[in-house]
Image: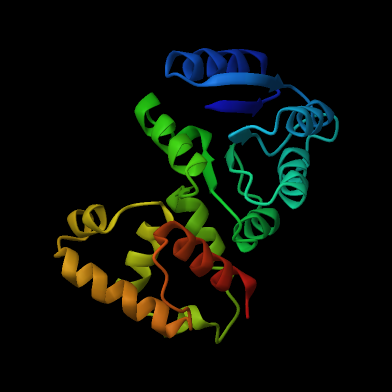
Length: 216
């Protein structure tokens, strides 16, 4: 699996390169700045991009903006954001396009290599890998009288776990219920949000997040 990595801190960037290589990934480019990231994405068209939000020269939101622009040029380009910050506006935009794998992890909450590698593979395969804190901040921005207000507290719990990329079995284990009960909750969620049936669970999660964060 070919990876483009963007991280401005030298030690962290080199550590990530070694970790990824040790787990079978091929790091085709390790960018330090926004322009380097843009050039690497255009040249390599990787299987997944792992980007920090804040990159030189602006050190604001350059990494995420460049990743979004790359997804406009290459719809479905898998992007995993790895940051210390939640940039709500661009995170919502990343989720709303619904065109491929997306993830948003907070650096200080990645607890081990297995968790990180699993998130990368999930995003590269078209799924989602969202930190619960990111989800919470996005959902609290939903407008008054938005469709999310129709969901029960339990349905919101199920939706949050779905957005993290968890399977029905994992959700059932986490919430101490049967898989059948999880299925009923997910069906109710999609019904209340006006989302039609789909065989692609990952894209259904993206559609739910897109709808919630659009404020429609």
